[in-house]
Every structure is written in structure tokens, then in C-alpha cells.
Length: 43
Image (cartoon, rainbow, N blue to C red; front, side, top):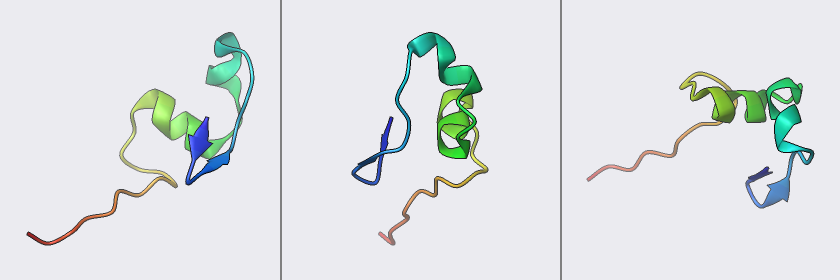
């Protein structure tokens, strides 16, 4: 998985659920809370 231009996890697709990486966990489980923050801009 790439985040912010860097590879933060690599492995078999079957192992992604047990990656131990909080970024991967947030993405795979579709959680809003976690280390990945969405940049917001005013309109």
C-alpha cells in the first residue's frame, strides 16, 4: 500500500487483514477514525 508517496505495507493480499499497520487497517476496514486524515478545503 502506498500512502503519501511511500510504500507503507507490502505483502500478499491474503495477509492484508493482519498487516499490523494502522494505516492499512483503517483503509481496509473503511474507518473514518485513524491516522489517515482527509484534507478539507473551503469552497
